[in-house]
Length: 296
Ligand code: PEP
Ligand code: MN
Image (cartoon, rainbow, N blue to C red; front, side, top):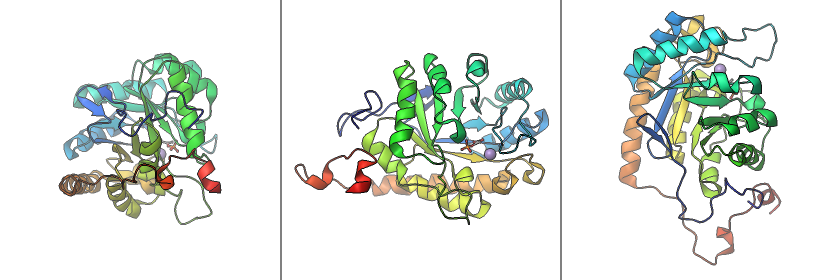
């Protein structure tokens, strides 16, 4: 990790970064972020927020600015969407995660949200990274769909280098030759990030699979892999969702998954899982620079 001055884990026992939002300590406590792909209306957002809270979510997600493939698709409600999220927070107490897509919007969007999301399509938007780095608002940095671990961590480094230490990584799947799923969710990144960085990492099985039936198993697998949290799309009536309806859970299915996650976490604690330890001096145990390991 020679280029990472701030994001690299310096030693096997170095302390992980902890980001505190209200009473949630990301990096220590397990965090579940849930909510609609897009903020569509006050009724939709508040109803969904209440349902995900009841089911055990810790934070509310919802896009007010949507980076869509087509310029003619619903682009989000912008400021109106952020005001709706603010109301949903007042109603439920859930902190807000929402995406920012333009460096010029960072400072005012920061007033409405608890975590600024940088989407996969903007992972290498260096002016956006620098701008969120100049503030202190926690940033959820999604992995770009064509990005290696090294590229992703270097993008986190752009934020850290500007002075903002509050970066959370999010694995959301990458493009491969597979077409059955929307993306290939790369869960190996969870232990890999923990091996080389002190930053927390969460997993997005909604965009990571694009398929309702795969969300529960991928949530469970991510938990078993050691993720610090999950972000999932939930809508009070998915059939009506204006974006990503095919991967959006209804509140009841989300509640069932949340219960199973809790059970699995209890089981894993009993199991006391930890990474395979490799004896000192064993060459196989050397941390390799991501990317280099491809050629070994
Ligand atoms: C999202 O979470 O709303 C989103 C657009 O995700 P991604 O950037 O991972 O595609
Ligand atoms: Mn979405």
